Length: 385
Image (tube, rainbow, N blue to C red; front, side, top):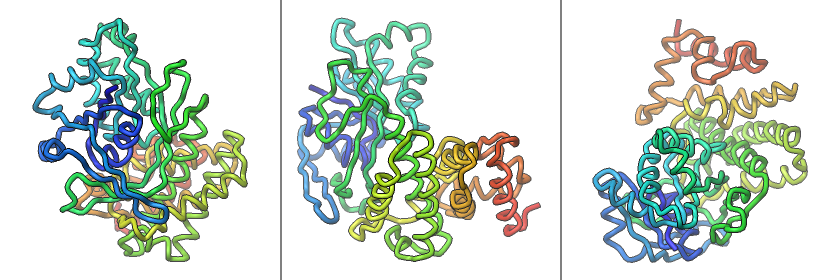
């Protein structure tokens, strides 16, 4: 069995690729970073270190890498004969991955089992998005090529912090992970992925993860950055920040109860587990890494505005989530392109226009006035017109 995984970075090697190897797949990493591809091909094994209580080391073998930038034909050949294709590249990069999958499907025999495609991204419906990009890239051949694949959405969860510069291709991760996959598209032919669980309805798992793990992680980063704290674990050690993050997650849990009928006690235990993971001092994770790309994180269906909009529509509390958005508006990191753009927009656009552009909220939406007021307050602090 063979799996092609797009994105040979830390999540690809330390989470998705690891579990695929444990399932018996030969793993072919595809990436555009020359040095990374060369480094992977220069070793016969790498180690995934689990840092923290209960952690262990996993030695990974049976992998190789191809460069999709310099050798797209090789990537297409690998996809053509793969059993599984996964991604961990970021939702905005899926459109660049799609042509490689299209090229592979074009070479794939229609007589073999369908290619099993899963986008493992921090986004709702990421595999659906990838399928749309594949459809666009395939053009007139879309119907024929899509018949050679099946597409399943997933919810993935594992904290993989920034790695030391001298770490080679070894990866440090937390011990905890979750990989939920919708089962329906596969019929009776489920992929072999130890530790993953297949579910009939993925929506509750995706939103529980996105609105708890991702919301809590980013909120910790933005409140921590506001306080001048460097590490995520240190930020949560601050009682005021911990209270702000907990309040935001209580609001998202209320939405999950209303939307999916999840048990409040189970969600309370889940929140406690998530916050304990963030407090893991063995994971040297920074507020700058977690807070990067703030424009994406305050967009319409992401971790703050997504649940806050759902809460506002149901008359549920939103103040703590809006407070987290306010903290995100203060995220000012010259090394992060979106942070620079965010601060520039705050200085040049009036509050309503900024709110519409960045959050995707309609001015008539019940959440819109609260976000607009947060934007106006930030602009007043900056001295914007």
